[in-house]
Amino acid sequence: MKEQSDKLRTACKDFEEDLVLYYYEDGSENERIRVEGHLQTCPSCREFLEDLRKLLPQMAKPSELPAAFWDNYYDEMIQKLAAYKERRAWWKNWFVPMRTWMVPAFGTAVVAALAIGLVIGRGHWHYPFSQTQAQIPQEILSDTNQLEFFKSMDMLETLSSLEGQDGTKVQPGNNQHG
Amino acid sequence: MNQTAQRDLRDEEIVALCQQGQREVFEVLVRKYMEKAFRIAFDFTHDTEEAKDLSQEAFLRAFSRIKQFDGRSSFYTWFYRLVVNICLDHTRRKGRVIWERLEKEKEGTAETVELADGSSLPDEEAIAGEAKRRADQTLEAMPNKQRTAFLLRNHQGLSIPDIAKVMKTTEGTVRVYLHRAVAALRQSLMEFV
Image (tube, rainbow over all chains, first blue to last red; front, side, top):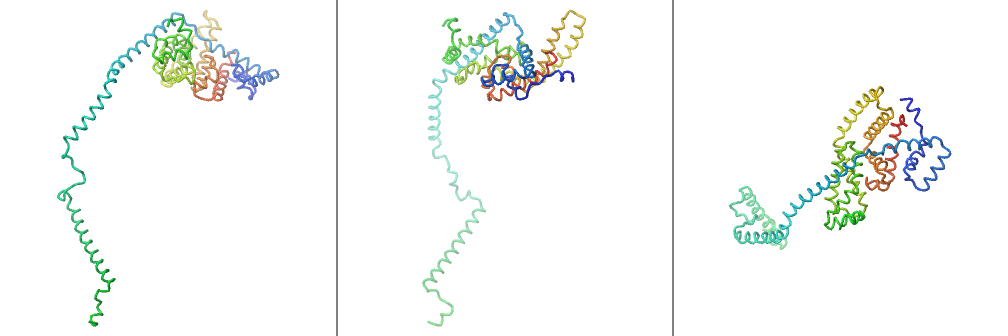
């Protein structure tokens, strides 16, 4: 392992990424000029680039496949496409005629159902808040009676205040005056 | 339209015809891209049958979604993205299986090389095979994005801007992925240089 790491030549850190792009001819013109200038003076980077040139093309080398493989591949693909088209056509044939008459038919059916519902249901529907007194629970009714009592008390208070304003209220000390 | 005339059409014209309902011209795109699609899938799977199935699935997906192609990118960028995504999904699902297979291959190779010492198998061939397996293992061990960037650049010859479009990322990020992938491969393959 040590032997391997000793063998590994390192490129200058600032140039390593640029060297990879240079190998693939992907850098900009300025980057290319900069890398080429550096390569003239740096043996480590030259060796790094040389390693890339040896290693990377080997990896990309495709394994040869016979022409029969590609013929078979193409035929199989065409069959799959045909099967897909057929499946899709089946669904399409099923839905297309429906699509032409379904929308107006569905709309008419909804309107008719609403009209029939309104005619038949007329007079049978109850407004949810129109409950008779008999349906109101007893506890609420007793609270209502108390409410009537408080209303009468308010009326008495109002009467006494009116009397006060008119000065007609008989004061206990004024009995002797008459 | 006869077959020769169809073959002369540009990708965008073929796609436009497909979108107008002439779906049979899609076969021209199959003929044109089947090898590249298969190679990408093979780089991810290292299995001929799987690569065939995945790349054909990509064609079917492209065919079914052809109306969604809006022409903002080139057809091949759009199609490559489909292939790569299908392969990445497959790799995620099959990750463990692939590792197990590579481990088995590694064990098998050790035996083969030992046998090869006294047999007719040339040393160079054995070394090349071992280097290939080591490269495959290093690629398998890489993060998906690094591997994808490397495979698209090194094996498929896509440009960095195109890879950025396929991977939906920036060109700067692709450069970083590519550099890291190459550095890792160089590190693992140094003894074969």
